[in-house]
Image 1 (cartoon, rainbow, N blue to C red):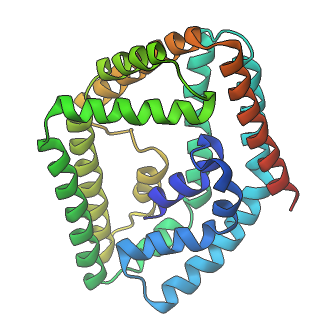
Image 2: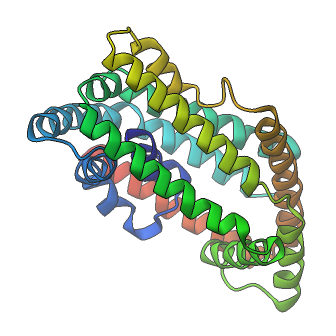
Length: 280
């Protein structure tokens, strides 16, 4: 859907999750977003044409207005990483993420309700089946051994870090694995939260089909996803945030001068990619 597509594809600039493919992904983000939305909503031709036209406008404005914000964030992050991180600097990363995420979703907030309000009964059923399939896939993961999931997460964390800081020593890898495995297993709370969000969306869409004005609730659903989150999810999210903060500070203290310079070089390359995108 628009929310997931935009956060994955457009915020990739901020999250730096696509690395050297960032410029390609950004330049094709309108097509990728449209593909993702169609995957969930089975859009008709008129809906695709409307969304395609609006994406073109949104992404032009995003390139002009938002990319400089991402550049500023990365420049400041690079400065912070030039020496040892502080707890306040890690907190700033979380705060900046939330601000940039909200800015991104607000760019879609006016158009998303328009698209969603045009869905017919068949498309709503299609969406419900797709969301149910996603939930079932998550539940399969949830039924797996918790320790195994934590170890998989730790392995992915090590791989991600090596992309940014270069090769890790065996001792660093061992310690980072320990830190990652010690983070809370929040999958259960996430699955419940995701199910709640899905049910809220479907309820709003059905209400819209019955003539109720749901534009503002849909906008709030998009822009403020944690406003009515379940208490257990809020607690799990905070526990993860606290754990990641401590883990980030511990990893930062482990870095050698060469590894820190490697990370700074990777960030600089990303900054230059964003500058190039903003200039085109």
